[in-house]
Length: 400
Image (cartoon, rainbow, N blue to C red):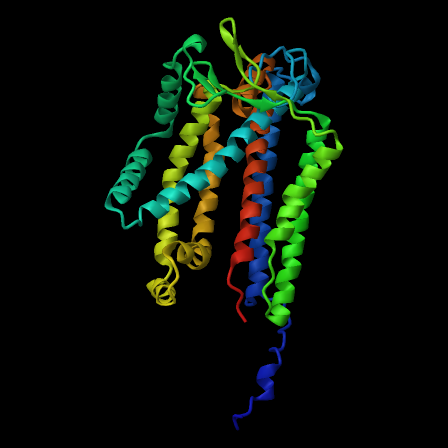
């Protein structure tokens, strides 16, 4: 035991210095300048709002969001929920938001998977794989995204018509009218099974958290995957079976000049998704490569000295440490993919920008239309940022 003692004064927090109303106090100066900046911002916003309202009044342009309750008369070819031209502008704009989210969410997942694989391939010892992945990254990043979207859309339009459809797999047909896939006729029981799966995921996360806490207490490892399979797979299957186990596959079939049945991915959606995924994945690949290279080489050497396989080393040791470097720039790429989806108007996919532009052209409510677009993208971007910041804080090193 060391004979040295610690000065008890070092264990106490330093005394708080009272704030004096003097310009010499840096806290007073900081508060003053914050008030000044907020005041200037409020004044600028007030002046812009007053000037805009005056100009609209002079030009006799009606303002407000009352047009949202009017009949849209706007045809929308692709929609997640039911929609007819007789619905209101508010429902049409909701369709646009859902179409944007459908591209953004699926695109983020696919771009993350593809970018991670390409980033790892760039560090492969296989010369051919390393060169192919490097060629992909350099080419894709140097070609403007708009040109890539037009390329994919033109390529899909050059496909044969439904009577000469390409069928790489039974029940799957690729034509110039999109990709037709088999689907299950969705019923109320399927919704309950999906809800049960969500509950199972939450239950698995809670169970894993409790098991990790017990492992930290007694040092005994515990298996989580049996409970995870039971919660995530077993529980939905039980609900599905209790609901009558409905399973009616809807396989596409040629009817006249087009296919009937199944689910269709339109050429516009497919081209937009392919362009966004391949473009964003090239940037994510470089982020993943840099994150892996940021892990000290001694980690690899120590793991190899223990006889661990390269795949296990990458999955269990390197990638968890690299995530702390990868996540912050990865967030920016997620935001870029979401905002780049606004280029959908160039290939005819009706997202929030396309539908809002048509709405403001029909109603003349330009300011309101632009404000709706800004609010939608701001909300989506802030949601992504909040989630990624939470995840980044969760995986950060905890200093003792």
